[in-house]
Length: 206
Image 1 (cartoon, rainbow, N blue to C red):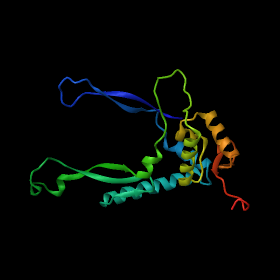
Image 2 (spheres, rainbow, N blue to C red):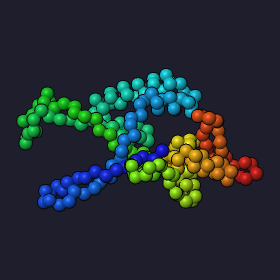
Image 3 (cartoon, one colour):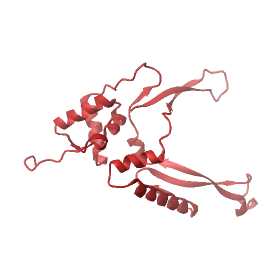
């Protein structure tokens, strides 16, 4: 499924009556709850939902602890967390305020370069068409995106491929089956557990 976008008018900061500029923004498709993510990971792995919930709770506690201790926290390839402070009132001289007047205000998140690249993909205009259609990428571009993804991940699902290329369900499966026939990838599993992995060269091919 491709992300949808629309445009939002932003008035000129100069306040000179200039025509508002249009800026693209994501049209939210809703909120994916933690439970949904854990169940999907569980179905594609040997971890139970309970195992994953335990790890998530432990990570949450550890991240919170290190932020309170004054550290920045890196979370895998996702990015970095840091805490911000706030004073009860603004001052011009740091001697004018005591520690009791400074408190934790918020937690900031900065996505890693890898995560930003990984979330790039196809978008379509919200409400532009009566029905959705697949993107029309060249085979070279689809292959490039697929190989780049599999260089960084152990496997790819049909849903992953759709997000990566904007190809809808049936077209995405056609593409993946085509790349299987071309010897680029291999199938593993079936049904909701079907994934595709990079093809391992046979002894004759090595």
